[in-house]
Image (cartoon, rainbow, N blue to C red):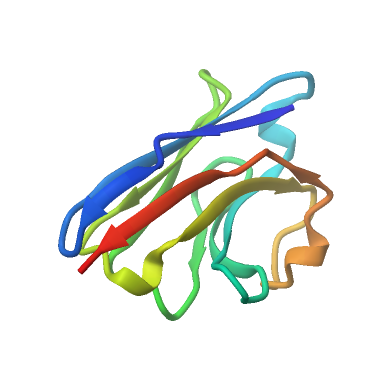
Amino acid sequence: QLQASGGGLVQAGGSLRLSCAASGRTFSNYVMGWLRQAPGKEREFVAAISWSGDSTSYGDSVKGRFTVSRDNAKNTVYLQMNSLKPEDTAVYYCAARTLWGGVDPLTYGYWGQGTEVTVSS
């Protein structure tokens, strides 16, 4: 089970930190990802982090602004979002998969319920 939290309303240029707590499986066996879906748009890859956290990957639209991290002792993955823009408004999902590589949301087999982020201009 994946439980995302930390979403909310923020002004453009502000920051938010999302968290995703995992339970029920061995957390360190999974690559963790953050994906988002804006109204009327397809689900989009945001970031991913490898099993131990030594590798990360980011979508082009968030590179340099967002940072993904994980704490395997706490079974939690984080997404620090800085310099937020109105186009970052979306529901953000954490997800898990066993293999590294690729940005296709369909490669993630386990999904949390999502947390909503709204960035006002």
